[in-house]
Length: 452
Ligand SMILES: Cc1cc2nc3c(=O)[nH]c(=O)nc-3n(C[C@H](O)[C@H](O)[C@H](O)COP(=O)(O)OP(=O)(O)OC[C@H]3O[C@@H](n4cnc5c(N)ncnc54)[C@H](O)[C@@H]3O)c2cc1C
Image (cartoon, rainbow, N blue to C red; front, side):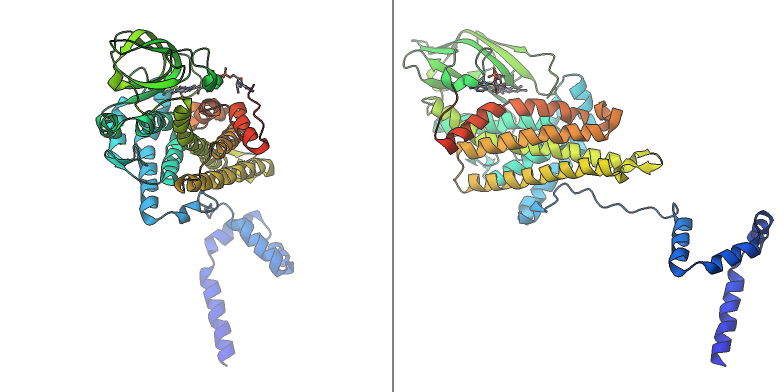
């Protein structure tokens, strides 16, 4: 009795759910009797498939979150460090991302972001004292990555200020010099530059700079040229590395803006890092007082200490550049449709994406360990060089695949991959080319120096 009642209820519910108007319309188009007969012959699996097909397109597919930190390395950070990482990320996305393409296109620098960068309080992150936060090298690397993920030019500007320029003073300056310069630089009230490369001396800087320094009664007289010097066109102070004509050793000098005989011409026509303002510096009898000679820089070995410290940061920056390109490309491939389907659903596109992510994951793991070594005081030149070579090489591959999966839009600035493709070229060459960093590693593992 109860079973019969339930059957009547079911029939009633079914009857109520039928839209007779719709059924009537349908019956004019198809033979409903035949349709019913056909349906009744289908098995469960076929019926499910049919329902899925009919529902298709109605439900929005929920895609996984874009996560370029595939091995969740951020889980190894403390809450405080993770918060800082996210703060820098949010800053870059809010303040830099919207304006960056326009500045890049016009070869111009967004000076208005400097005070906002200062507010982040991340400049001179690892230095102790002088208003600096005294945090880890790992966090310094993560910040370089976060900046590079949005824009490699801003990351480079920051790296020159915080790493090369402040680092020269922090590692090679006297106590008075540190007190004089570092607090103002930490707050970006003083902008610094680092002048090592010359028009005719790049990779071979260790072998013989041609800019000379001659000690006289008035001070040190500098003569010669420096090329490629980031921030130099507007820097308040430029660290100039020059050969002392007295003892033949390389020494460092803090050259103040406006010093007579010190001229900076902006280098134009770059196809990479166009926001970074690079200068060609010409020094003609430029006199620097003894108090502005870096008091603890006595040979190129001291210059190399600065480079070793900052080279790890460049490897992290390369990771950021690759990460930005990967994330933008992945997002694009999930939205862009061809042949009626998202291009991310094609096997060949997925192959590119997975190759990119594999390299990116390897790079991130590598630099993470590199910074741990640096924090433990175990970093050697060859460690930093290996990371710089590997990451900048793989970055070139990643940005080129990112550009490839975007078709024509891959070369348009507005799609946020083209800039990374171009900028990767500069990262590849500065702070030691692939060849020079490979030679540093080669010397360490073989015991033979193959530079010349
Ligand atoms: C955008 C940008 C910003 C920069 N910013 C700064 C800065 O702020 N301050 C600064 O001082 N410098 C800066 N540089 C300079 C940079 O560090 C040099 O470009 C770099 O060291 C290479 O020197 P180079 O360009 O003179 O090339 P070269 O030294 O002339 O090298 C040319 C080629 O020869 C190869 N090569 C050289 N020697 C050897 C060898 N022994 N064996 C095998 N191959 C070799 C190189 O690897 C390279 O492929 C910047 C450069 C760029 C592009």
